[in-house]
Length: 81
Image (cartoon, rainbow, N blue to C red):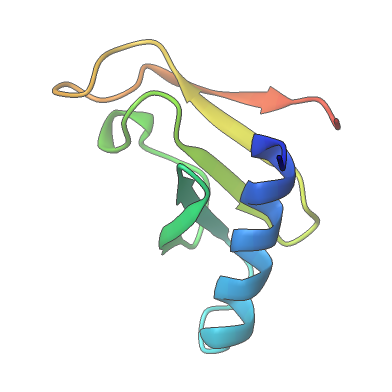
């Protein structure tokens, strides 16, 4: 079984390979599947808690707090694992 962080990183890498028009920014990942891109990490309230954002340097952030209806409260850096 793959860990959520490695799944998020792999999903982001695959997404970037298929969407070369989007440079930089973060790839958004939910349950191991990439679902979007933003040019910068912002607006956690637009994402549900538990969503990941992976930047071009493979730094991973997780949306925390809030709820599925009102969105997350903040982005938190995830330590490498």
